[in-house]
Amino acid sequence: MLMRTDPFREMDRIVQQLSGTSGTWSKPSVMPMDAYREGDVYVIAFDLPGVSTEAIDIDVERNMLTVKAERRPAGKSDTVQMELSERPLGVFSRQVMLADTLDTEHIEADYDAGVLTLRIPIAERAKPRKIAIGGESGHKQISG
Image 1 (cartoon, rainbow, N blue to C red):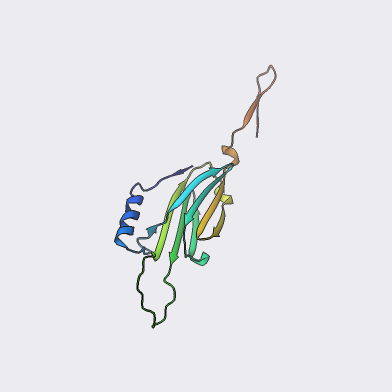
Image 2: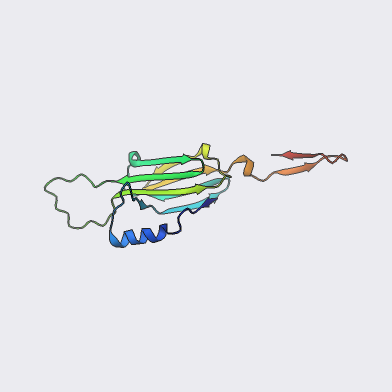
């Protein structure tokens, strides 16, 4: 149902994890995701722990789904001395090419426990249909 657009994305993610670099608006970090079909709905789940809903942007243009998010550092006072900082900060982005069989007009988005879940219905035109064969004239009727 979706097509990968960048075969080197996973390699970039690993390099960013090892180097400890944060994503920027010009070069965002990749966000992990799962994608699966659940009945007549296609589900895509993105891990975005610590990101507020106001910092998440979801956009669909034609069949290209783009999710961007930004995790900012927690507000710290001048008296705080950071001892360890392993949680990635900065900009995260993921683009997913959606198949024509998905109904991008009716995407639902939920955000719970740091996971952004998008539910995309399968388009009616993509669902299997039975074709009835008429009488002796051979006319066929499609039932949906």
